[in-house]
Amino acid sequence: MPALVLLGAQWGDEGKGKATDLLGGSVDYVVRYQGGNNAGHTVVVGDQKYALHLLPSGILSPSCTPVIGNGVVVDPSVLLSELSGLNERGVDTSKLLISGNAHIITPYHVSMDKVAERFLGKRKIGTTGRGIGPTYADKINRVGIRVQDLYDESILTQKVEAALDVKNQMLTKLYNRRAIAADQVVEELLGYAEQLKPYVADTVLVLNQALEDDKVVLFEGGQGTLLDIDHGTYPFVTSSNPTAGGACTGAGVGPTKISRVIGILKAYTTRVGAGPFPTELFDADGEALRRIGGERGVTTGRDRRCGWFDAVIARYATRVNGLTDFFLTKLDVLTGWEEIPVCVAYEIDGKRVEELPYSQTDFHHAKPIYETLPGWSEDITKAKSFSDLPKNAQNYVKALEEMSGAPISAIGVGPGRDETIEINSFL
Image (cartoon, rainbow, N blue to C red; front, side):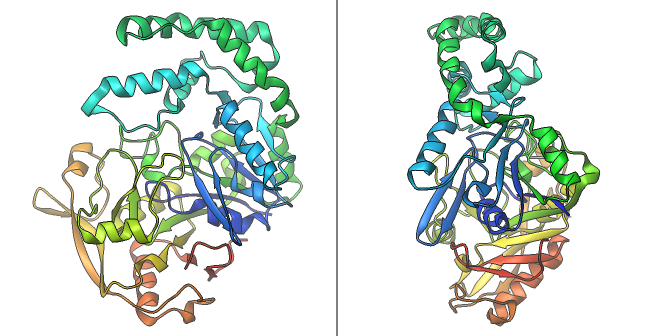
C-alpha cells in the first residue's frame, strides 16, 4: 500500500488541511513531519469549522491515527490546548502519537523569537513570534530539549541551564530584557509531562511497521515549498523543510517507501509575511481575492498578500518535490472575473526567464509576464465532475496543468469537505 506526501506547492495556506482531511478516511496514519504551531490548517466538516495548528488534519477522521513526527517542534501548552478544544467538541483525540524525539518549544524560545524580530526592525523576517526558529536553531546547535527529556528531570535541568547560560546573556546585555530563571522553566515543562505521556511513542518504529504491514500512511507538510529553509525564498522562509524530502527525515521513513507526492496549489497565489512575491496585487483585484477567498492566516490572523497564479513557482515545486499530482484549491474564488491573468514567466533585467532564478537578487527584481485567460460567471460550487464546470473554467484548469508540469487530480470548488471534484484517485 502507498506512502503519500502531501505538501504546499506555493508559500503555504493552499488548503492542505482540506486535502488531508479528504484522504483521512482512506488512510491509516496521517503524519506531521515538520514545523510547529506556526502552521495552520482550516478544515470544514458539515457546518463545523476546525482550525488546526500542531495537530495533523487526520485527527478529525475516527479511523485514522494522527502522528506528530520527530521533525516537528512542539509547544506543549499549545498542543494541550488544541487537544482540549477538540475534546470539548466531541472529537476523539486518544489515538494521537507524538515522537519522543520531537523538540520542545520552551518559554525562552518564544522570548528570543519576539525580541530578535523587534531588534531587526525593518530587516525583520516576518516570523510568527512563536519560538519556532530559535527551537530549530537549538536543535542544530545540539542544545535542544526533546519530548523524551520531560521524563528525566536531571537531564532536563542540565539542558535548560546550559541553554540559558548563553540566552540570558543575550537577553540582558543585548536586548535589555530580564533574565529567565532556569528552575521556573524546568518546573513548567515538568508540569506537562504526565499530560503528554499517554501520547509519546517511538513513532519511527510505528510508522515503518505500519508500512511493512501494508497500511496507508500520509505525510502532511506545513507551510509550503517556497518557505523551505533550503529551497524557498531565503531568508524569508520557515526554519524547516516542508518539501517532500523533509518527510523522510522528519518522520524517519526512507525515500524508497514514498510512492506518491501530491502538491496543493491555490488557483491564485498568496503569501504571509515579508519577502518577494512577483504576482502580488495592490489594486481592487488583490482586495477582491483577499475578501472572497477569506485570505487571513489561520495561525497568525494576518491578512495574506494576494496575487495571480504563478506558473513559474508551480513548475519549480514540481521539480524540487518530484510531484506526481496536484490538488487545485479555491477555483470558486475566481468566479466572476471576465479575464484572469496567469504569470507564465518573469522579466529580469530585460530578459524573459521561464524558470525560478536561483539568485535572491534576481528574484527580488522579477516582474511577471502574463497570459490572460477568459473567465466565467457561473456558480461552480455544486459541480461534482470536471464536465460540470463551465468551459472556461475547464480551460483554465487545463492551462494550469500544462504550465505546472504535473496532472491536476482534484479540484476544490468550495470550502466544504464534499465540495471537491476528484479526477484521478490519489490511492
